[in-house]
Length: 111
Image 1 (cartoon, rainbow, N blue to C red):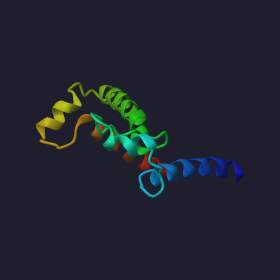
Image 2 (cartoon, rainbow, N blue to C red):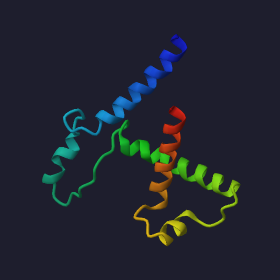
Image 3 (tube, rainbow, N blue to C red):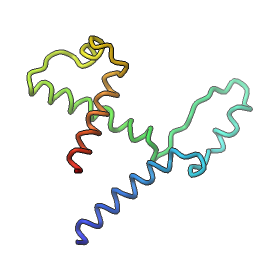
Image 4 (tube, rainbow, N blue to C red):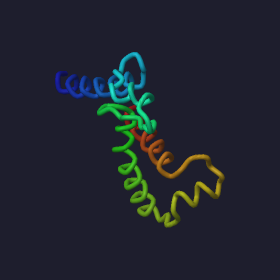
């Protein structure tokens, strides 16, 4: 029982942290970001936190691209995904499609 409880707790903690980092009332805005509108010539560069959805996607996007390309080559699909998405007039780009595809795969294995 404890073997299942420890990984489940860790996964739940990371998921809850990623979910809460999207809410403004939970995450603290850095001083640099609060003062940026008042600095002359400062752009609107948004900082990304360590455990945020953006940083998570920065890690998952290349991983999903490489896994998707290898699996498509394994099944004999030689045409690039971006070309196929443009052909069907999809609003998604290849990276977004692959990340969504990987998410559905993990959700299916979870059930």
